Image (cartoon, rainbow, N blue to C red; front, side, top):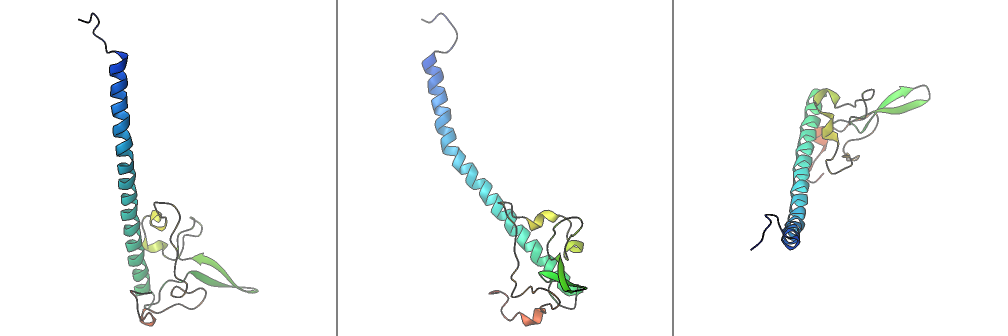
Length: 137
């Protein structure tokens, strides 16, 4: 019969080993769940960006937003205003349609791009009627 009421070193090591094994099993599961949450957030951001782009097109005679807006300067054109949010001083063409600028950033890192074949640069814009196969574009 033991005199003390404490745990032996072996009992403590066994408990620590069991906890370590459980942690090794569960950490990858948590990492996958976190990445799946990021994917869902990314998909939501892309849906919001599509809705915002269509709202912009509705306000601008069915013309899609351009990658860059061309501004006339003394020596030609400069491309200063972008379609996406860049900073408070250059919020982008879609800024009036959004509430949260975080939709422009991918939760897993990086940002979203635009198809330059559709969202043209400069002074001309693509009309919605010009996009013949929207699902494939």
